[in-house]
Image 1 (cartoon, rainbow, N blue to C red):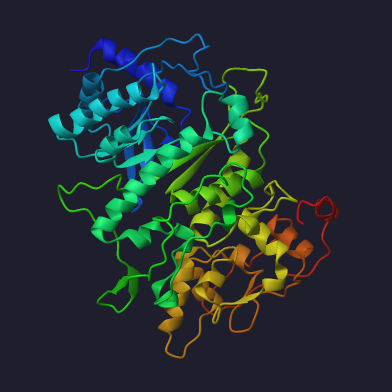
Image 2: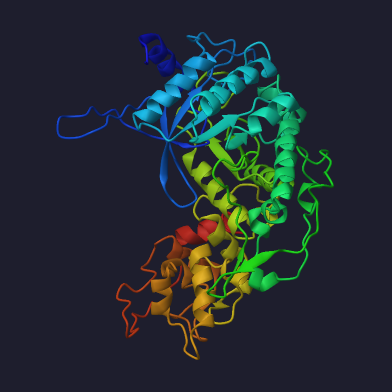
Length: 509
């Protein structure tokens, strides 16, 4: 039974949770009519996506918005005059089950303010999750935010109940953390993060799938390309990083084992996936993530990307989330956001993050200390290609999988399809029309590839020519791509003054 008091708490605590971007908020209020079934309410419902692409609805809520900390960017800081409330473990458990039975949600995303101490708050959260798992037999998805400074024993207990855990990094550098969140330290954040990682590694060791899951995503090559080779994780990404460089490596994480895979009935090589049997307990089986606030401090994109790379390499995070800063407190120590959050910068950081995780890019390939801001005109992959024209064009029929990943317009799926198609051609050759069917985005890729030694259109391999077309100053791909592959010819032209000015200004370096 959801009482009026619980609904009031729900409205307050879901509103307080909306600035955490570890899942995508959305939802509507919709009442059922006589012709349908089920109702929808917007409060606290957010949408996340599973690895197979399914949209999953989660109850996104704080356990409490009371807080002893005074972080300058937080709506729930102790100096703010906001209505305070807290759930009890029983209330939160019953609310979650009630929503689940009504088919509002499939899981829970739980964060919290800090009452009295991190351990006191996390103990209450543990009791709520324990009720859900054991009394109510709830087997749905649960994501728990760990408060920095939480005792290791509490992390251990929660990790066997939660699917995912996360410790918010909040700010990229130690200086910005000291300035805007003086009650938090990098040690209090990194210590529970390391604890989760090492406990998860031990669980993976026990189940025999440790090495694959320890590797950052960018270091997970195709077995067919690297069978029998050994890998170890490098410290190079951390040596110049002021935020993480003094956090010493743990030898149990830095291993050098042979990649192990299996061969399917079709003869293709894959990594052995981690699977959970019914009723089997695993420690944080979905891994851990974190969040960085973007724009609250003067930290550059370069510092943010370097920190993200270090987190992936050193702590094996599943995901770093980026949240464009909104000055909800109108604090004089914070930047003005009267024009709205910098969503374009947030978008570019997510694109750069994707290159780190899935495209085998290093941070220094995406961005440099000399040019510490991401290009706002182009996505990071196009920007990389324009700055390394000596590597292009790439020949589709001979390029390796990892080389294909560097080509704008070719993603992970399309690169795998190209490699697979080449091995099954039996003497035939791929065409540009085949590439389009495979999923290659030719309007970007056409400037950086050849197919059977030929370009699709006449090309000037110059920054100004390619930039002008990528920016849409002229039609940049034939619209009548057909099976007979008769294409319109793109005429060569002098770039406009506006593009030349941008080049001179160093937007494309």
